[in-house]
Length: 569
Image (cartoon, rainbow, N blue to C red; front, top):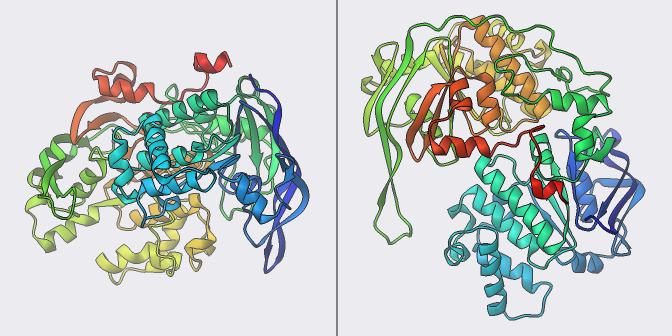
């Protein structure tokens, strides 16, 4: 049971120094964390969650100013403690799991050496003893081959494995408090479930209190004892997990919960909190219901895209001197996509989803098989005819931050396909119409990507994809990097665009709830093969394959009963 108070954030206010003066990012927040409990801190990007976590670690950036408040831990105010005191506390008494393990792990050192360093920094043991403990930790966090992992560099491992290594480093010295900042963002549902189970087990085993920071309400529901909701630096409410989800008090919390895609209301419009035209949101006053229900779907048409027996093999080396071995990324895949429909493609990372999308776009050559678009075999087209055919399909990338050139204006970004394929067309007028279509103001035309939020950037990416009036849009994890409320806006936008322009979607994602919400048909991919395909309702309600059932069982479900071990806690 949760016990004594171990971490206290008292009336904390933080501002950033900017050219325009101080900009408040945290406003009088007070939180307590007791030993043995898991406190969930939920909110959208920019709400102040990560700044709070950095304050709790004494890691605020240099341009941050604490205007009021304290962060008390182990008898110290971490905001004013001496550097030598903080060094003794960090890693030993209080540790942090960062969001992006690939960015947090040093790429030039092996994973084992980094764990060993974290242990020896705080404990007087030999390197050999630290290495043995590191291997034990890797086994405890579910690494199948700890010895191999110790020798590996971060880039040689998957995202889930790297996240487990970060967790192993965080618990290496059995800290009193673990701060986990978005530890499951962008992980597959199965890996996410493993990481959440691991955190819960470690919480029980070593008694560490956990501050779990996320924008995923399903994750919070699965593991947290209490929940605090933050919006634009203000603490909106905090309550036990059960009470908050049964009867949320603040309009913002109600809006977040309502914005989540639900299997019970597929292809309906999701409620949104507000428009993010220029990101000038001052407060949430009420939950705004959907302004219109989606029109009845247009009937599916003839086959637009047919994939037959498609195969793609990579040749990989385990070491620089070893012989290359074949890896079948796409293995005899066949798939039919009718016009004006949405086909969802789901599966874990590495199953071949993105490789399949690149093959369809003809960004790489398949080993064998056929890709027919409106009866034309794309595999056999020469360069000129393939270039002409590409006007009819476009790709929406996962990361809106990385897929836009920061040195180009919105006009240049959106007009890039027009400049290549339709020279002479009035690009300014075309861009203006596309901005209207995706719900962005026309005064965005001369601005740059850094001036927009994540949701706005994804709208720009979608506008660029629509520039040539394509028939097929391939959405590769198009909403996985977005907060739940922004995700709802983009999903509504995609549905509206499909109705307006008769678009066909191949929607690739590892988020089962999102795929169920948007799809007519769902194909499940495992190890390069499509193992199950059928109508969305049938695949979700009556899955035929064990792998599909495993994916579905790993999805956090709000309101379906919490883990028994957690309820007993």
